[in-house]
Length: 76
Length: 225
Image (tube, rainbow over the protein chains, first blue to last red):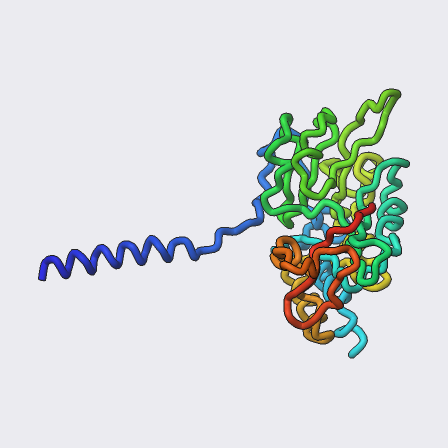
């Protein structure tokens, strides 16, 4: 009985270790000011015409990206 | 958050070089520097394929890893940029880059290299956005204007796609679904296909006409840029 419990625990541990390899780590580096030797940079949406409105900038970029799909564009 | 990427559809690229021209015009690139190039495999042979190549803004960029002065940085959108005030023009990034993206203008006699210049995904550099200083060093900052790179937006056949990786991957997937072929142009079989015993698929003139099954030829003919 004890042997069976040990086997189960070992199995669970191995399964947890194996599944740990299935996770996806974020690949986009978060820009941190001063983390490299050069000058700091501002985000693309920081200045006019977006003036810090990140959502508006993302919508604009997203619209343009989708406009590259003529299958969608021509249907309109 | 977007993860900015380029994707070139080899089935659509007609080697017109308008992406190269658009880039040079947009950023006032000096003679001898090509931030973007069109590479043709099996040139002149029926079934030739062309792709437009520039900095691919790698998620794990080797240029960033090898730079001795740490002049590279990556924006939140995944665009790999560099500070020209820090660059010493050593050329390590050129050796590390698998795409030949870093370019070095000749600034004097005997091939003296200047500071590295490369595709910025039209995102400028660390200078103030849309300033004259930024334009002179890095070119126009279209991203700060809410626009995508000029090369992708100018592409007449929309072979070159630029933008959020997920969006352009969906566009490409949509295309492949519509035309029923094309997805096989990329992938392991294209790059590492084992030559068959009869030699089929490995000769320059033996290019498969893109069948539905993933059996593209290995590009073994001459390349040109």
